[in-house]
Image 1 (cartoon, rainbow, N blue to C red):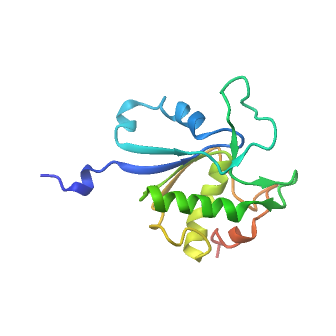
Image 2 (image 1 turned 45 degrees about the vertical axis):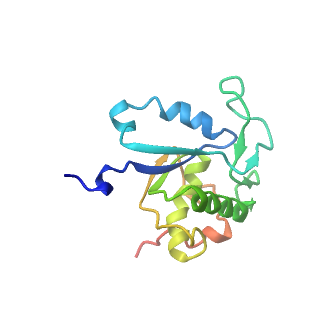
Length: 160
């Protein structure tokens, strides 16, 4: 007889891309093979901020569109980053627990930094430890052309 833990679906919080929505990411992910989807409980969250400009998916997917945070054109300065982290943590407290994250584009850039920020004690301190990430079309803060939000400055291990 299987124990309850092995029967429980893996709960995943899904973070969409820049100026899209949880509903748009849901439409894309639900195209995955049914045997994969049957093992997962996917929860799709909208970013906390309405899109502050035109979405690249206008005419393809219906609005509303959201952002997780904002950055200047050079991606060297970020705004609303701390508010975004508080929003995600609050959602996780009210609707969790979650085992991990599935994320796309801007959501993936954000999610990539979350385990490190959680380990440093600067984000998601009130929720269970993140067990895994599924990143789609992501990048890393501080890599190539991306700057680093202050809270994410120690999120990634430095090679020895």
